[in-house]
Length: 484
Image (cartoon, rainbow, N blue to C red; front, side, top):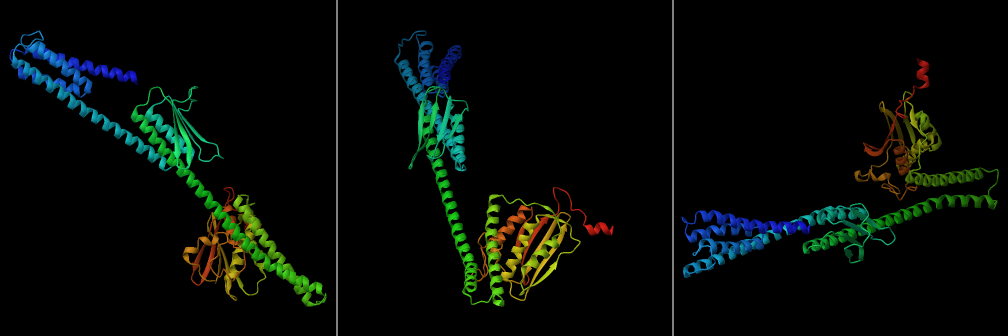
């Protein structure tokens, strides 16, 4: 770079001398027809042009023009002697004007060059700042900073090291990607933040840095430090939010589980105490009722623990349905038969002509059990629970479980499938708030989707199931084959 600068400077000086020499040759041919003042004015033109190449070439052109003007156009010719006072005054005025023009034009050029350099610097910094603003990791910041500095400063090698946390490995980026020279870096600029150093910039240079380059390097280091600190604070905030959400879920889980376990345990304890006291005859009807209560409460606790395990498998991605061809009506009938609820009626519409469904039998039983259980909790007594199943098209089955329970505000329809989330009569019903979340996880694991909606006078859960298994359509039902 320095060699190129020296060559450019020497070329400018040579061009300035050549311009004066050419002007002198042309004017010498016209010397007899031009007056001395006109010749002096013509000499100011190459002086002004030379000054545009820099202050040095302009001054050289002014001095060389003064000597040429004196030597060729002031009598006696071809000497530097001056005999007339008028010619002395002309030479003095010419020299002053030539110097003034070279100074003014040279300074204007220097100011323009400085303004262009500042503009380029501002453009580089704006580009760097813009690219750093959208980054979210220390590695991305190191890559962007290294690439920008390599493009701007053209060093032999640049290495960026960023480490916001002492417990994690640093993010390192080199440009070019090859290993830096064996010698130590020529410049090391720390990435300083109010929390302390977060890394550094290491440069291996092939030339000394100019003051604008050093200023640009320090500004880039400050911008990178701000970006790294922003990323560190964002990561800390994210960790705090995750910990807060985890603590909230843990609190909700413990509160819900402790509440749900206390009720069946109290019933089991009371029944066991009554049976041990001897107040109940072993042949009496009360004994059978107490044993039935114990059995029901144990089943309730077993379902509670099963829901917790299912939710854990869904969140860990370990819930893998064993999809086989099943008759949906049989699954619905089996679940309804086990409900043993005398306060509600069931209206099942699942035609025998429905195609076979590729589903996990046990998991789909749990979906229907949870949706029916939710309907029984919120629907008033002596109302009807309706279950409808229809083939939407050749590849999709739509199922609806509806009840005459209260409507849910529209803004809560999406959230009712969240864990521990309740909207209606939450203080008067039992449950952990996991049933609908489990339904959502199972349906989505089967490749379907589930949603809730308010209907005129009813509230409904809808979900879809695909009718293809590995691209294959449902096989023909047995009775269809017999009919054929």
